[in-house]
Image 1 (cartoon, rainbow, N blue to C red):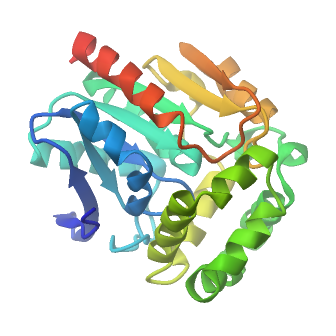
Image 2 (tube, one colour):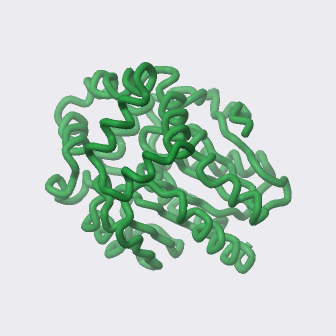
Length: 292
């Protein structure tokens, strides 16, 4: 798959994205995890093509080839997505946020809910900066959350070991991850295709250093700038019962604070998925055809 992005300049900043699939296909914007990059979209692009879905996957500021922006916020990023949609002459479209991409996906509903035909979250991170969730974070996230709150200027250094491992010793990084995750996720990491996409996505995420990851971590672990109760669209939400990165209690916090939500429990599943994307895209297709 072609992974070289299209470049668009928005307010003087370079924003890069993949635009994959038929031009007249049903459009959906995909929000990658934290940290990650547009390359993550390879996990489900074959399903998208089969279902006549056009996927636009953007590198958020500082990731991949998108310019870093010191002051970007989730709400500001939603405005960038709107400008990309306008540039592509797409009026109505779906939004799918995975893991750390969930916050940016939800922000789109705050800024332009009337244009969204489907709003999906897969294993989405909760706004831990605005409720007591430290005990529900895994050790790695707890470490980064404490740094974000107490020593934010050192976040770039904190991400350096992860960056170096993925760049120079990717197979070792995969083995380290296997020690930290559920049986379901270990099986996914044993999948050669999944592991390759994960490595490529992370290497691209850190291709210009760790500033992008550091800025987004600061946003993730502090106040998002909006409340979940302000989200205006119905949210379709998938979460795994064996996810060590997004605890079930975090998912339940999101559910309990949204106005309208449809939930799909992935029993026995963790944070990494290949088998659920087809289901998600089929639901998107049905909702887009009704609401588009």
